Every structure is written in C-alpha cells, then in structure tokens.
Length: 379
Image (cartoon, rainbow, N blue to C red; front, side, top):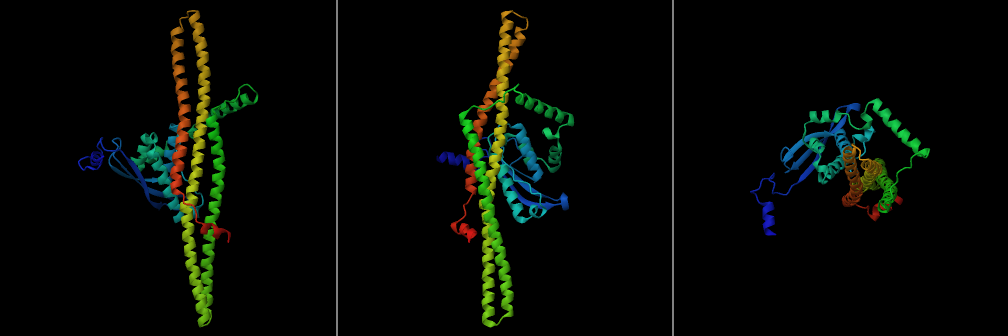
C-alpha cells in the first residue's frame, strides 16, 4: 500500500507518463456575453487538464459557445448508436431570461456536467470529436460546426427518398404486407415501462419544484415592496409610530432577502437537478429508439442470412460454380448478423448501466427542501 502511494505521488514521474494514473477533467467557466441583439450569445472558457498521450498537452484552454456543445452532442449521437449520450440543457428563446445572471450560471453548470459525463464515459471519451471540441481553436471549431451532418442537412432529393421509404414501410404495415418488428425481451420491456412511468413522475416533480421556487420569489418580492411602502409610511408619522413602521419595513426587507436566497438555493439544488433527471430520461429514451432500430436490423439480417443459407445449400446440391461466391456472401452476412445481435445485447447493458450512473450522480446534486420551505408554500 505504501509503495503504491509513493508511486502515485512521487515527483519523479511526468504528468504524461504512461505509468501514472490517466485522467481527463474539464471545467466550463467564465461565461461572457458577446454581440448585440439577436446576434448576441454567451461564450465559455473550457479548460481541459489531462495526461492522456492523444491530447496536445497537460492543459488546454479554448472558447466555446452553446452551439459548439450542440455540435458535440449531435456528432456523438450520430456515431455512437445505442450508447447513452448525456443530455444538454435547454436553449431559452426568451431574451430577458437568456441573459439573466441566474440563467447563465445554471446553463454553465449544466454544460460542465454534460462535458464531464462524456469525458468520464469509457467509450465516448475516446471520441475524436471530443478531442476536437476540447483542443481546436475557434476557427477550426467554426468550420467543423458548419459541416453538413445528419438527415436534416441532406439534399432535398435525399430527403424525399427517406420520406418515400418511410411511407412505403408504413403502407406495408397497414396493408398487412409486413408485420412490425417488436421486442420480446421481458427484461427490456420491463425497463421500457419503468422509463416511461419515471418520465411522467419526474415531470410532475419538476413542475411542483418550479411552483415552489416561483412562490418563494413572489413572496420575497411582495415583502420587499411591502417593506418599502411601510418605511415611507413611517417617515410621514410621528416619533413612536414612525419608528415602529420603519422597523417593520426593515424586517420585511430582511425577510425578503432571506426568501430570495432560499428561492435561489431551491432553484440550483432542487429544481435544476430535477430538470437534469428529466433530460436524462429523454436521452435514455433516445438510446432505446436506437436499440429498436438495431433490433429491427438484427431481425432483417437474421432473415437474410437464412435465405442465403438456403440458397447456398441449393447451389451445393447442384454443384454450381457459384458455390464459392455464395459461401463468401453467406459468411459475411452471418458475421454481420452476429455483430448486430451483440450490439442489441450491449445496448441494453449500457442503458441499464448509464441509468444507474446518471441517477446516482444526479442524486448527489439534489437537495430536498426543508419542511419550512414546503410549509411556506401553503401558508
């Protein structure tokens, strides 16, 4: 034990030495408003510290904006099908909320959680897109972000073909030509049912948390207004009555400050983590949609493999010259089918794992309100 501690803390080792414990930590800091009007946006300083050899150095600082984080998430979602991709905070379209100090700080914290979840994921942290996001300068990042990715950036002709394929598939199902592929794994069905119910419960909890925070803010503002009015009234009255009014106004203002602080604490430690729960469930549902597609592909490949096997048997019986070619195609398709089966099984394991990890981390961020806070809401 002593030797292990010495090896980890010894000053003789380089921070990028292969024998030292590897780490990758990211901090999203210093939000700054840039631009004016509709062109205005918030930039963040993203600081990366690591000893991984594939990175450019032990520390790197870059400037990123919200759309860069969106780019990273979209790239990961496109490349890592069936893997839980951490959720991003919502983008506010209302100007007065978008640049409020409170909203900016909540957004900064949520972005910090987002990128660190990726950096701690065993597969996502190896992504080339993550390294681009954490290391490249703003010009390179701008070029990468402007690249056309995803089905909604394809040419109109490609989009029309996609819609025609979907329409054809729907028609086949409706007319009975093709039966929809359904999951038959009881464990998966149980998990899916749990996720959908959990989303409803969390959405309701987040709604009640919003009411609690809003009520605290309104009470705080009302007490502040009342305090000012009573102080003005005290200034118009005589000695003893005027002093009493003035004291009442001062105490009302102090209580207002206390309620505003409590409202802020409830927002940051109760409502916002609950929002994170809801976003996490939505990301898990997206992972399940990827699994459903993978399951359908697995069934189609299994069916195609059976047909190839039957065709190969026929060719072998008649000793056709195409036996070699058909055997190669069969083996290739069989390998692809087995890989699809592994992807489906792995996606369920990853969903279960990330469900536990995300909720464990979120639980550490949630602080339930005190009885006093709850009672205040209903007084």
